[in-house]
Length: 395
Image (cartoon, rainbow, N blue to C red):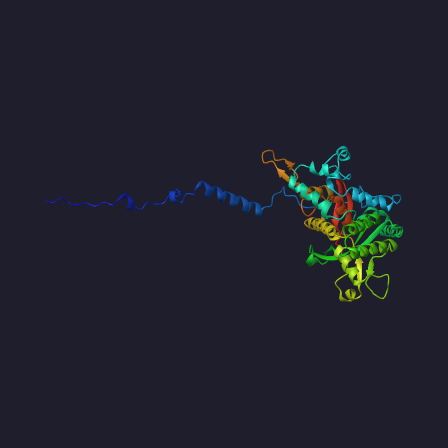
């Protein structure tokens, strides 16, 4: 009798009732890196949904008063020539007597400006050489802005400075130049829907130099052009004009007057940088009027404008358009705060020396602030922890 075949279901085909807590399919288990990613993602979403209690809300600075005495300000007893010397003698950060952030007072008094520059740490020798070349060969010497002088005598007012300037100019001690549309100005919209909007414009810049400095520059040009008799005569005529007309801001090429310059003279003076067109307006070009200028003064104005632009942009990043002076110095020099992950404490990193790189070349921040203060772009005030600076919203 043939055996009877019996069939039984395989264990794999048996349907088991799912328990309340089934194990995760091994194929669907997350890799360690995936699991960590999901944890981080969840943690990040929680931080976004629930702001940390430790997050500091930016608050306006506490103002004590606006009666601030700046380090470089002078009294009425101090002569205007002293003010100009104060600016020129403290023009560069490493040699300025207004702060000791790079060298001590004893070191500065015992070394030349070149030695002070080349002894700075954090800059390559190539960078230092470029700075020296810029200061010596490219930047015109002895120029200051009238805005800087305004800030030195801020408590005495602009009228005091204007009268003092006029007196020294008539005495033949100073020479003033007006450069049209040469400096940027900032405008902050008063409208609520445009809050924080910053626009830029341009205004005339008044520059002052000692007359002897200017005439020495002209004499240097005469010496270089000694082989060209016509050019030499033209420059000598211009030097005489400057001496005899100390208040003159313009010259004319009107041929109806003997004392005026010929078109050939004007062309020579333009080539040497001693005169420029007063503006691009057609009626002024046709009037044959030219502004007396200082050769390469555009390089100086470019430095001043770059510094002011940095200042405006830096203050504009603050919610209240204001910052402490110490914080401004740190940002100007490229000093940042780093956090020690082990100890949780903060310490200052080494300076990046950004203020010594193009386009600032080590220009002293005090004079950046002075120029902006004199122009009415910023205002200064006292706080419990030091001086503060704020944009004014000048139109």
